[in-house]
Amino acid sequence: MTEKKRDNVIAFPHLQERLVEKAKEYLQNKRFNEALHLFKQAYEIGQEHRDVLFGLAVCYLELGEVETAKTLCKKMLHEDIGHYYDNLQMLLMILIQLGEYKEGYETLQAVIEEHDVPAEDQEQINQLLAFCLSRMNQEKDIEGQTEQEQLTRLKDFLNETVVSNQIDHLHTLPLHRMNQYSFFLQELFTNESVHPIVKTEALKILMKEQVNHDFHINKFQREKKINPLTLQQIIPSPLAIHVEKSLREKLEHENPTMLQASLEIWNRYLYVLFPFSPVNEHVGIWVEALYALATELYGEEVDAEQIALMHNFSAEDLKQAIKHLKEIEEISLI
Image: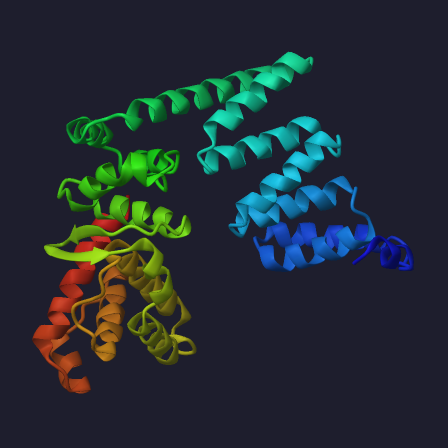
């Protein structure tokens, strides 16, 4: 909308405030698309409203439009809109997410030099400054590393035996910079010591960054060649969709609790297995296997032979599906 057109808009009294209030409610419930729509409407009424700009930045960040969120944060900082240190904190979070540690470091240095930092913010500013400097040094170290040195880096990574900590560390690395991380990632994807969930997380990061690079990956004695960019186009798989649909048809009205348990098992299974698909493509077998395992988790026994006979499919295939679900379930709860 042009400035001329905006000047001709006659807003209802307090409309912007009502839009912002409702948008904040959507934000709290993680309904980011709906919140973004309302914040955009509020923005058309008044562009300098601090809650509107901050809300837009949060929505864009949560929806993956990180560069747009970054631009809004810079606008709020440069034009002194809203709380300066809230805006600075969000900008630094975005820069860290983008792996732009040098810009983060330089931004913080400028803040320290040009502002009298409040006492309550000094400790956090110093911590962020140290973090950015540390990541800058890590990137500088890896740029000239040989393959052997990157193998050593992977060993150091695996020395952290807590899987959740490994995942947290992955999210701090700019993995999309293939000139620095291609060998590290290839070794991570093929190393049998790496937890399958860590491989999934690394691959999801590369997909989000739309990395166009070929890798070999192995999990559960299976190997394939993948490209994170093309994987974007095949999620979710037809099998996953059909199994979920059949589970809902079977349990949504009869037993919603069992449906929820079955869907959680299925989603964890697919997540750990990714980018591989279940070996068995039989929708009915997976539906009954998931129902059987969920039933067992609630303390009831199931007769796989009888279930297979009722549905006219192989008892051995059903048992194998249940067994594989159990194996994945055991390692998925990190």
